[in-house]
Each structure stands twice: as C-alpha cells, then as structure tokens.
Image (cartoon, rainbow, N blue to C red; front, side, top):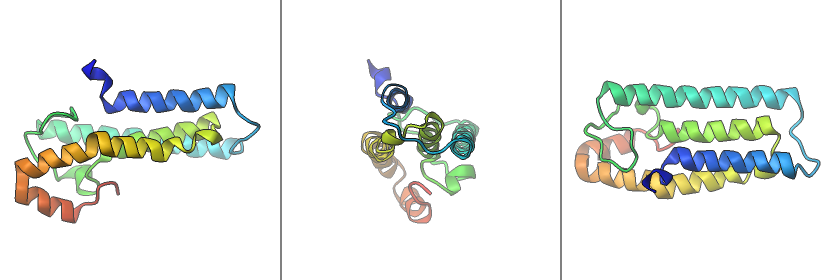
Length: 149
C-alpha cells in the first residue's frame, strides 16, 4: 500500500479524473481546437523535460528520487538552481497540458487541488527533512531558490 502514497499515483489519479470529465461530462465546453492541442503538447513536453532534467541531476549526485526518503546530498545544481521542486512542477505542467489536450474545461480546478495535495503531502515534509539534515546549507538554498519557479 505504500506505493499508493507516491506523487505519480496522485498525478495519474488527477489525469484520469480530467479524462473522465472530458469523456463523460464535456458540458458543451471546450478550449478551442488546434491551439489548445498545441499548447497542451508544449506543456506536456516541457513538464516531461523538467522531470528528466531533475532525475538526471539527482542521479548525477547519487541521491534518492523517492519522496519519503532523506536524500544523501543537497542538490543545488542544474535545474535545482532554478526550482527546488522541478519534478513536481513538471507533474503540474503535464496535468495542465493534458487538461488542454483532453478539452477538459471543468477539470481546471484539479490544478490548484493537485498543487495543494502535492505541497502538503510531499513538499513540506521533504523540506522539513532537508532542513533538519542540511541546516544552514538548506537555509541558504531556500533563500536563493524558490519552491516552484
């Protein structure tokens, strides 16, 4: 059951809700054709790229990618010099892009809900562990780099 409490599971759940809304209850609403497909594709691609860059940086530093584990290194280079949470930001971009691609207008509230869940369930506990493990280094990093962008 521990695997259920992982960000990709929450992302998949939100994606399935958006798809279901578009498929079973479109309510006659839409974003408007080709531009939404193009923008959605850009968001999904950008989100996947962010995740790939973040995972590569974590691997380069030989530290964990698992959210509930304490990392063995405080990664501040690469994409982590721009965002403290590039994987979660990538998740959000993928969700936004798929909402556009699915034409799921009524699923837009999933974006702030997903952000709230990810922040409360994963980001805040992760940052608390980092704060305890890397004290002054994390304090400097936290002042220098924003949580999202």
